[in-house]
Length: 106
Image (cartoon, rainbow, N blue to C red; front, side, top):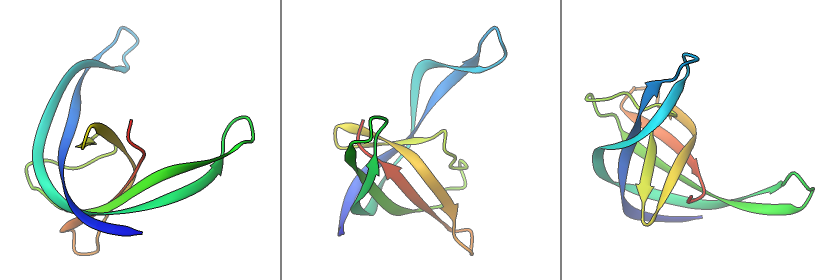
């Protein structure tokens, strides 16, 4: 597991309601903030749909709570040249930091 400081952008994509009442992305991205976080990287073993063993890269980091927005799994992170989707999100016991786990760069 490596730990290194990196800049990430906290983003969310705007959605509109579709005819069925569900949410549909309209493609407009909003960057809420750019922050430096200490990222740890690990590999996760799993089997895919065909039964083949595959490895997924998991990125874990902590992010200070920003009172301007509430972080949810609808948010994502721009990191280097890709997008990190949130897998797990947990607020610490003092409600000042998020523990974030993301999978892969897409």
